[in-house]
Image (cartoon, rainbow, N blue to C red):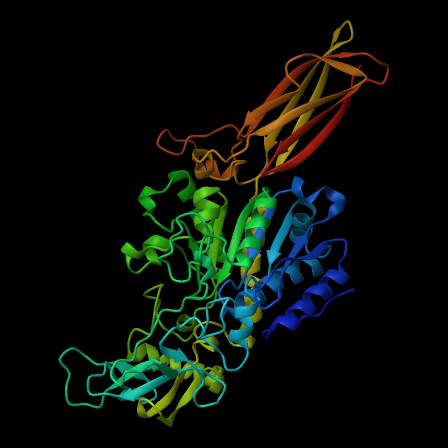
Length: 557
């Protein structure tokens, strides 16, 4: 049975739920769909687990985690996560890499963390919204400008208000475009730009704009949490959606890699959130760069440091984010992919990664023309005269950021989904892979036998995943255990801790005294066993929290 899902459009909560249930019904052996939380508006936060149970329990396999749409207006993210579910299930048995990964690993996917906020940002009027359902849009603002669709056209865009003190003017080439007034410039027609809406408790002079308080849930995680962050919540995991994420991550300690999807500029974000590359662990930085190179090749997105290249004001680094918790505390290799780059698609040279607005008139002309041609009125609203009851005669219009800068038009969506999911699969494939390379039994006489087991990590990543995990004391050692049947253990403990086993990433270059020094990839252990019955046998079990589990049996005699 094949489930057909169109990936040239965006789905509301009801449609997304129907697609996920259709996949779960069509592939009951390979996937399981559950709800990890109920939102404030009583919507389920869906969670899909994908693996082949015939190849072993899920928790005995390396896990890869994907989440999407923690921010309400980032609709392309949930499309990509849904595509990951669909691709893994429908390509199983057809695609070699997909089949191998679903057999040997497990995927944990939360397609839409923020169903309430997504619905607010997807349903006209399209709210430029980040928060979840604790409040409805505007309910969290005590006073000042409340974003609203005052013209009734279904969009919340901008108001340009004539003001001789204004910072903006119409572009000389295209008056639909607003450009900054130059220092010292006088004698023209100038404007102030505000979000479209009405002003609560307006004093007739100052248009006050309060910062939105309703849940930027990517500031609601415990590591480096501070209430001073925009939307940080009342305390870490105060929101039901992030509390559900917490349980998913804590209940699945086999997670080796993560990708959290966002939409801002077509880039792959890597740690650190709070420090320079020179202050990071060198082995971890090398590892992130190597994986990032794979992502760049598959997606076309550059991989950059959040702190060095995506934080405009280094004195205001982001706190309480998901990757603060998952990498800086738990040592999980975590990326945040920002889907979709409108400016680059429109032909604008890439000069910055965190742009709060277009840089200049030339940039805006390219972007405006591309949006009008490829998105139409859904992406740019013509300026319309409006008699505002508080501000007087104004015009309302401009770029619809949700359907221009934040999300691509449907015709470009599937390619974005596909390329980014390919990177997810390659990142997942880099997981540590524990294997018992050899078990030998040597007869010593008098029913005594020396049992030797050789255990290796066949994966790219080390079994500890990162240097941070070792330094924080959260990396679990690889263990090897011996079970006897018709025999008894004479010497050495049955359970042995091998410590961490390195991965291929440590050996990216030929050996050099000046390079990263190599750690063991393979270790062996021995036991002395005495046979006590005619069918005596032993079973060796190797277990890694991140690298899976495997077993091998051998007869004595």
